[in-house]
Amino acid sequence: MADFQAHGAHVFLDYTGYISPNSEDGKWILKLLEQAVERSKARNVHSHVEQFDGQQSPVGFAAVVLLDESHVTAHCYSQKGWLALDCFTCGDADPEALADDIHHQLLQNIPSLSLKRRQLVPRFLHEDE
Image 1 (cartoon, one colour):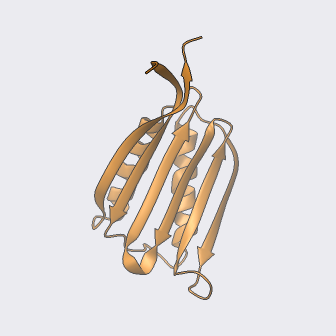
Image 2 (cartoon, rainbow, N blue to C red):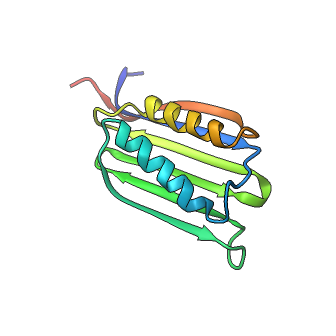
Image 3 (tube, rainbow, N blue to C red):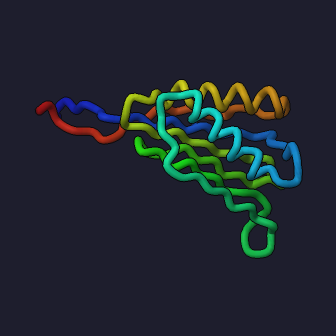
């Protein structure tokens, strides 16, 4: 099997114990993601949040910060207390540092949050050139 190099990395975080800090928690999380991106070397090219009221989808939200290096996202099932985050970069920005920043901000605001999984996956695998 050939040795592969990665040009990027993807960090996945899964939480339980999510308790909404306010009625518009999707906007709050999006702001938290945007601020973490601002503190990193990544460049925000677009961001969006969609709040779900339970009519067509379970209560919760989906938030994304599109980076020129890839993306940072959050998806939540508020009534179940589940929150999933991912940080994917392929430039100079460190996805682990982004994930750390977001994780610490979340714990400061939602002490009930419990990290169930954190996984780093190499991305854009390629052979030596």
